[in-house]
Amino acid sequence: MMRVDGWRLGDPVFTADRIATRVGELAAAISADYAGDELTVISILKGSYIFLADLTRALSIPVRVDFLGLSSYVGAESSGEFEWNARMTTSIRDRQVLLIEDIADTGRTLRHVIDHLAADEPLSIRVCAFLDKPMRRVVDIPIDYVGFEIPDHFVVGYGLDYEGWFRQLPHIATLERA
Ligand code: XMP
Ligand code: MG
Image (cartoon, rainbow, N blue to C red):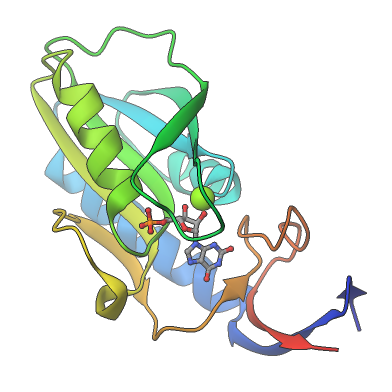
């Protein structure tokens, strides 16, 4: 049993097998939607790195990948005030852009990123979130591709972390007090 800083893993929410199946379905849908075209995939660090790796390897269209990183200034809950810690190096002007996020919660992170990228005049911006907590939404955002909807429980694994821990898990699990 993995424990860290007074927390332990709860029951699996999505197994590695179930995730692999769902990621394959998402990749097929994205490849079909952009058939004959090309895609600039932008990963929001850090939580989306495993999802990004699995998803992009299953796409059948030409793809290039770039990264951006931001964190909210105040507290654990995203405040709407962000600090950039990684910038893209690719131009997205006149490109089809797909944003990859680990989880959509209040929606503030995605709203901030979408508004920021729109200034660079891409042809289109769509969003693919591995997880979605729709009941937590504060800011309205379009999510074009969703892996799984989940209730308002904190989850870790498959790239998602608690204070940097548990990203390595191949499945998604809840976090419980140890
Ligand atoms: P907003 O509120 O801006 O936040 O949509 C999105 C970010 O909040 C984090 N987040 C989580 N991270 N397990 C996590 O590991 C969760 O259950 C969870 N819920 C929200 C995450 O960093 C995401 O990018
Ligand atoms: Mg994150």
